[in-house]
Image (cartoon, rainbow, N blue to C red; front, side):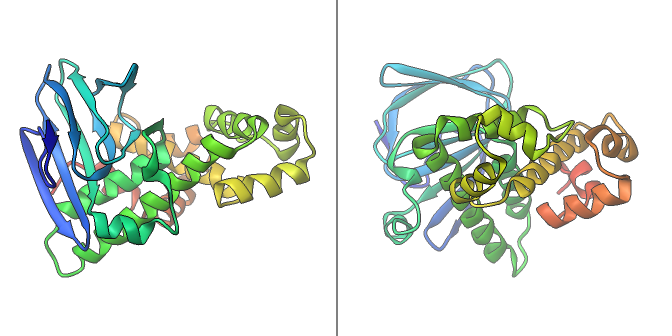
Amino acid sequence: MTLKAGTLHAAESAQRKIDGFIVHDGVYPPSLTIKRHDHELASVCVVMAGGYHESFGRKERYVIPGTVIVHPAGEHHADRHEAVQTRILTIEIEAARLAALRPETRVFDDSWHRKDDVLAIFGARVGREMRRRDTVSALAIESLVLELVATADHAHLAEVRGARWLLRVRDYLEANTDGVPSMDQLAAVADVHPVHVARAFRRTFGCSVGTYARRLQVARAVTLLQDGRESLSTIAHQIGFADQSHMSRMVRAHTGLTPGTWRRHDEA
């Protein structure tokens, strides 16, 4: 069964169509089973809450909040949702817009998924803009979607082309967000010179090691802010910011939203 453009299995879905992108903020009921199907359009999905098992070909992936999944057009898959409600931000790309993006990205050529808190922040910001209907929201959504696609493309290229030692460096950074390592430590993980780490990392991931580490730090802060159990000052100390004010500046600089806004993320 092929699902036409703009069609999903969500029980509830807010939808915006913006210059070749169809953006859905969908809620799926607990224990939903979706039989084998494919989609007319390529898409990228960001799982915001809940989780599900997805089988495609002879493979299966389990996706949790913060997972980003790319589905090429025509890819067959089936889904089994957990016994909890699942929220997924889905961005479909119409054929003409996809053709226009091809000189810049090949991320939609293959089925691909990755747990990525930085990409998940883009998804959360798109979801917030979906609930706004002012004159700027369409432009804001489109720009965020393009940033998400560009960031996903860097991550995908790293998976496909990146040297194994470089992926070890990235994984080490992601596993040590509470205590940022030095360049010498990263070089030891990679068993290459620190200068080579710095150059190769920027070439592959599109940013410096320090910028990537900062993005991870901010993503961790956003996760704890949305959890809501710790005070802002406690979160700032726990993650390694100089103080609450420093955290506030960095969160706003990297996400466009204040920590207080992220804490109130469920408000319209």
